[in-house]
Every structure is written in C-alpha cells, then in structure tokens.
Length: 221
Length: 294
Image 1 (cartoon, each protein chain N blue to C red):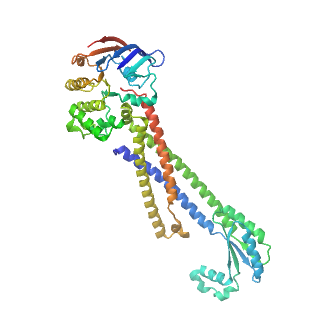
Image 2 (image 1 turned 45 degrees about the vertical axis):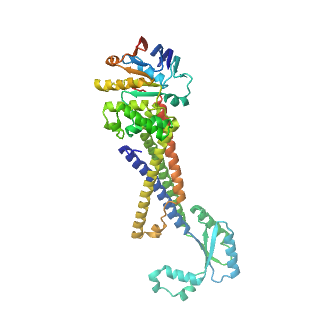
Image 3 (image 1 turned 90 degrees about the vertical axis):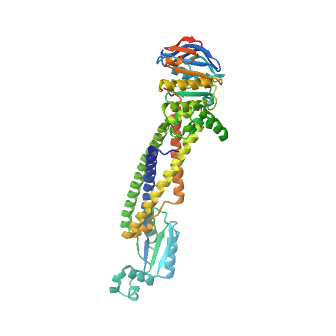
C-alpha cells in the first residue's frame, strides 16, 4: 500500500525534515505514527498525500510512484485517500449530509448512489439525528465523526489521520478510535499520527516512531 | 450560496462601484448631449440684399451646398423672417411694428446648417471657409454666425469634455481596483472551503466552476442593483429638473443609457470580475497546494 525507500526531505540548506526513511505498510494494516513535535509526522503525511515531493528516495502509494505523478493527476490520486484532522476541516456553510456527500459529488457519483452511501455512513457513525445540522451546531466529537464519515464515504484505500483526537476528551477519543478500528476491518489502511500514548494501549497495532526525521522504532502489532 | 454579512457588504460595495461608473458615464453622456445640442444650434446666416435676383440666390445656394460639411440650406423669405422676428419678442411684440411694416426692413436669409457629427471647432472652420468662398458673390449683404460666442463655447465644450473624460477615467480605474480587491477578499474568505476541496481531490476546474458560478450570481445581483438605483436616480433627477423648469430644455435633453451601452457595460464588467475571480482563485489554489496541514 505504502512503500518508502530511503526518503529524504530537506527544506532549504541542510535542514532535514526526514532522513533516510524506509518502511512498508501493507493494505489493511492499522499503523500508529508517533513522535514529538517536529519529528516529521506531518511532513511524511504531506509526502504521502502528494502535497510535497521528497528531496530524494522512492515513494509508492497505492501503486502510484509519486515522483512521476503529474499535477493534473494529483486530485485523482487524492480520491484514494481519506483525511481526518485535529481541526476537522468541515465546510461550515454546508450541512452534515452535504459535507459527507462532497467526495462523492467530486467523483461525479449519481445522486441516488450518493444518497445511499451517505445515509449508510451517517448511520455507521451515529449521526442520524444531525444530518441536516451545520457543523457549528455540533460538539467536537460529533464534528470529528462527520470528518470521519466524509473521509470514508467514497471507500478510500487509505485513511490518513493527523492527531484525530487532539481536541477531544478521553471518552470521545476512545469512541473515535473504536470507529477507526471498526472501519479497518473492511480492509482500509489506517495511518494515524498521535501524541497521545494512551491511544496506543487501546488496540494492538503497529507503531512507527519518528524522532528528528528518523525512524527510531518500528514496533509490530 | 450562503449569504454571510461579508458577502452582503461586498455585494453592496461592488454594486455601488458599478453605480459610480454608470453614473459617471451617464453624466458624461448627458453633458456631451447637452453641449452637442447647443452646438447644433449654431448656424450661418447669409443675409441677402433686397434687390437680389433669383439667379444670384440660386448661385449662392449651390455654392453653399457644394461644401461637404453642409447638411441643409434653408431659405427664409421676408414674410417668415418678419413673423419669426416678431414671435421671438413674444409679449413685447405688441409695441413693435406690424408684419407688413417689418417685411420691408427684414432681409431674406439663407440659413446654413452643418452636419451634427462635426465638432464645434470644425464647425467654426467650415463657417469661415463658407464666408471666404461666398462673401464676394453678388446679392450678399452680410454673413454671420456669432463667431466670438461660438469660439468661447468651443473652448468651454472642450474643457468640460476633457475634465469629464479625466474624471470618468479616474473613477473607472479606482473602481476597477476596488472591485478586484473585493473579489480577492471573497476568495480569501473562501480559503478554508478551497482547502477542503483540494484535500478531497477536487480538480481545479471543479473548484473554478463552483466559485465562478457563485461570482456570476454575485455579478448579476450587483448589476441589477446598480442599474435599478441608477434608473431611479435618473427618473428622480429628471423630474426635479422638469419641475424647476431649467433653461435650454435641459430636462428634455437628458437621456438614459441605451440598451446597447447597457449590454457593453455588462459584458465588460462581467469579463473583468470573472477574470479577476479566475486569477484570484488560481493563485489561492496554487498557494493551498503548498499548504500546511497543521
């Protein structure tokens, strides 16, 4: 699913954000990415989602060699990834239903199919009573559920979650993680960055530890 | 499109900007119109001798009509000239001579009108040309076109038109800048939305389509608003001028922007706003591609 070989990322001069990173993540794996601030977690995500190019090395995601990916192909590539962020990144002028529907609209799905898929995922994340509400009227946990539903509605092969529980209390964090585990059973690959070591105890999962851009530990599940 | 307070205020600012351009253009057009109508009242009067022969009059008329700038040469016989002379004095005419008595005193006249599309300066030059060509012909008593007045008016006309054009150009430039700025603010306001679209794999054209459609709705509303305000102002001012009975038929001469001009204006404004939006969107999306997900 994701294959990194000797990846380096340098921002001007000698400042290495990632150094000689090599690992492979298989389809359906659930992987935690841990490390302190500045360890390179976000940089790694940017490379995997084709927001930035690596300075050197090979990076293959879902069969795409990102070095050869043309600008026009990037949006189509990103449709194979679902993103979940700490600050949710929802559209405030759209309802819960419309927010979740967005990836399907972009992919040009027919309305009846969109409706079917959106209602199914709303049901799974437990937002049946909030479909017509706007994000500002939801709690943090509910907003994160909307973001998760949006990330999953088009059935991507990979979910990238950057500190998805960063703004949530422990109980809500656990419920979000339970949702992730539930969806990972369908074969979706999850790459979850977190500071919260408590989350690592909630499930047996592979843990990649980064520090100063270097992979210091690859602990199997 | 969801109407936020920012969008509503920007809609009004863009509509008022368009209104400023339209009002500037309408004022300029009417200024030209009024000046042009005064300008068109300039005629060359060829006063004929009392003993002129028909052949001599015919030669003069033919000579005048040879000039390509001449649109009409009207012969005014004594009777008509006397009656017009009396009419022009209105209520005071009772104390004047009768038409029969005036006929012997008022000369026959050829009134030369020039084409309306000529500038005032060209009219002055044509009148002088005509005077030089005909002054020595038999049967002419005097030629006159009020040269001094016309020259002064010509200077005033040129000054007013230049000032008008200059002010219009300034309005156009500043308002274009303001509109472009408003578009930029609107796009910046939608940055979070753009970020989400890029994130979930929307192509550039998908994003352009959404935002340009929104801008088009914005544009139509702002144009409708500015034209409605302008037309209401025009009707109101015309009414005020009519009631005040302004001199030289000022109110009657006022005209609104023609459908063709409205079409051209809408086309130019739409192109300008849509191109500005497109450029703003393009640069914003480009910046978002180097975004920080933090």
